[in-house]
Image: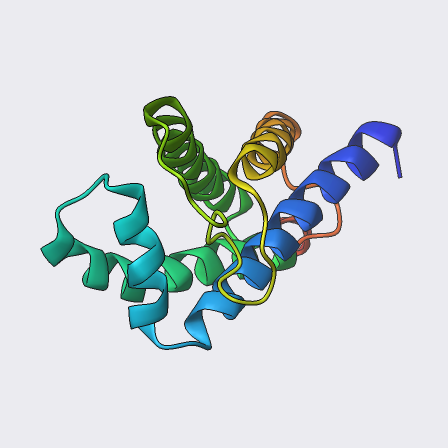
Length: 150
């Protein structure tokens, strides 16, 4: 495996694993718990926060598993990049506005990360999304397997 392919694979797997962990952590708890976190950001109307709390973990899981398996990896990378960009925007506006969040809510109740550290972690995930997009899914993906079978 070429170094570029190994880096593309690592980027895809890291982002996928983080999204699956984050999505599972939130999806396994009542949506009302994540709703409270979303409300703390004071970014969207309160009547939209429960539907967002119910849907967002499943979007993370879908994108994460697609990345881990390498299924439609370019689309999954774009979706993951969009999710990470949304998370970074929410964190940045909270930090700029001085909103005191006890944790970012990124991983539900499983892991508590301070918002400034979460922003740095999301910046790293954004860079990995870019690498995965730029270099493709790598050879160890269902996309590559399907392409070889044609």
